[in-house]
Image (cartoon, rainbow, N blue to C red):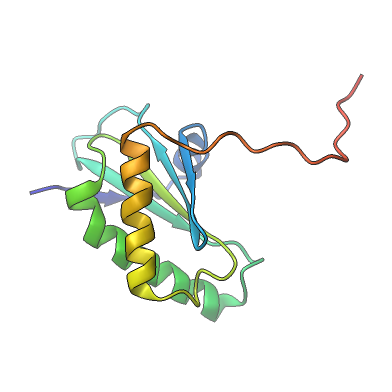
Length: 130
């Protein structure tokens, strides 16, 4: 049986951002393999939804749906000894649950194969300091 824990520290969420990124229409999946395995769980997950998505009711609904998806999919498809973070995207709360489940399965497969999306480009109005 796979033991799953929840990520609670900000540092762990920030560390996940250095891992593999797989973007889907409803969410972005971050998977960080470079962690020290904990004795409490085989893998961990976290969910984050920003205020850009909507009010508290919308954000909490999206987080509940994501937690349900992850608890269902991670025991079979999750990577052992890794942190998995789902970041909600605009329109993700309106997506059908079955569609989100399929997108998560594809995203977990891509992450396991190491086929993340390329790094995001910086905004065109960004000017580095001299």
